Amino acid sequence: MKYFASLVTVLLAIAAVSADDKWWPSKWGPTDTLGSFNMLGPELTLKASKLVKTGKTYRLGIETNSDTPAYGTRTFEVHVLYPNQYSHHHPIGGNKFNYFDDHVSGWMGVGSQIDGLGHAATDGVFYNGYKASDFAKVDGLTKMGVEDYPPVVTRGVLLDMAACKGKELLPAKTPYNKRDIVACEKKLGVNIEKGDVVLFHSGWLTYLESDPEKFIKEQPGITADGANYLVEKEVMAVGSDNSALELIPGEDPNILFPVHQILINYNGIYILENMDTRELAADKAYEFMFVLGPARISGAVQMIINPIAIR
Image 1 (cartoon, rainbow, N blue to C red):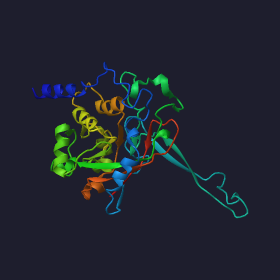
Image 2 (image 1 turned 90 degrees about the vertical axis):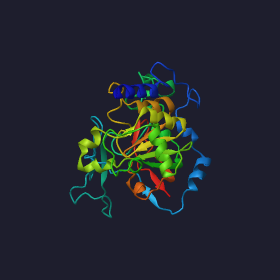
Image 3 (image 1 turned 180 degrees about the vertical axis):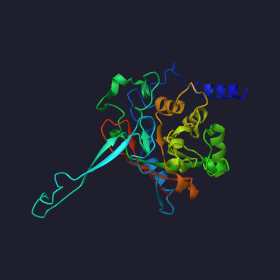
């Protein structure tokens, strides 16, 4: 009976937008490619700036290297080069100038990252009804690439789900549904508002180095019901201190990554993964100014990022 009730819950949660529904055109228009980033502007910037009281800054990105655990076959490597200078006879110019360069071989979806609107689809249909053939090429997206993102400055909110559940580290497969999220808002004295970037803290980064396999395999996270609540609140982006954001494995093993579909695919809300929320949680910094300017690599679906929180 418990399993049946859980299955009914997840099916009802995604019923608002299913593969058989038409979730486009977007509320921002039939040609829109920015989704929730349309909300950015002076109003949200000024609102966020009023939260800066101490001037303390927090970097929210983790280190990214060849040991960073990542989903599927994703890998990342940096190669440092000393072009044509290995002999002391080959410096450049009369001043004998030398330099290093670096070459990156890897996936943008490793480490702390933003998932763009060209990342998630339902039966081949992406945000705002775009099909892969409309915008995807081997050498990059022609729409919804990270190069088009505006500067992101808005209010950030941290929901320390571990603290709200009386723990330092949440167990694997701990769900955050609407009821959990609302209860955590109330307990921490913070309200999710339109245009916010909402970050969830579970303590999961504890496993980043100590148990990389566990870090990826089973994770606490948002359920479809929780995602739909965030859609109702009209947030701009949702992030967490784990690699999936959503509950892994999900409530129904036959429904894969429903939160990615609900947020990105159906509603144009961005996802931030592997956010380092540890310092914010330790300081009980539940409201802050959130700042992000991803590298403008043309046609990229995702991007490795290091957002900054200021309070």
